[in-house]
Length: 255
Image 1 (cartoon, rainbow, N blue to C red):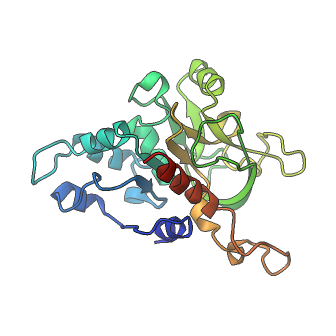
Image 2: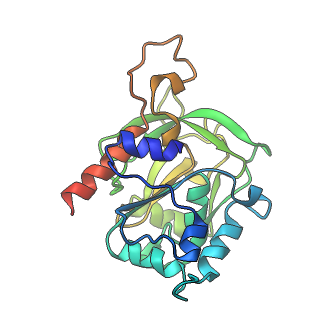
């Protein structure tokens, strides 16, 4: 509901909350939509690893009414130029489905999000720097963001250094954890709340249309969401809706 609200604030007139089971039963389909938002939450309680069980369901389930593999809806959705946003567990899901980072267009898992270095669940606000050279649709025109994280498995890890090098070369590293004073990337805790390699907080695919991040933009939609809203003069709108507004603008300009 929080993510749907952020979509509406970003200018989307029609926003539907669709469950996996509606897709599996064939009662709903991704076909009519322009953007798919995979929200944060606790898929299966994260008991089998964050989003891993859900990824297996999507990869190996067929739609009951048609007998067609469910995951084919996701691949068709992407091939048709639509947008996809994964937040927290949604980011973990996209990574474990192989939709991100999709280096060289390969749909296979190349990175993961694993246990925080702190060994515990992190619920705090972090400073983020957007990469101006990134093709990411969602972060266009953004610079520094302040958003909350809420995760136990948010440490970004690549399968090898070549993957990290390619992410840097193609500017697929969209958001990085930064020191608020220097605005430089940091591995220092708690500014980097999980120990992510290269301080990575969010990445996109080579097209910039698929974006995943661990922080929660939908959780800062209004000044009263800010932890210091009673002590600071803040804009009425939080920093989160701009990412959804950018997505809407892209859809309008490319439809």
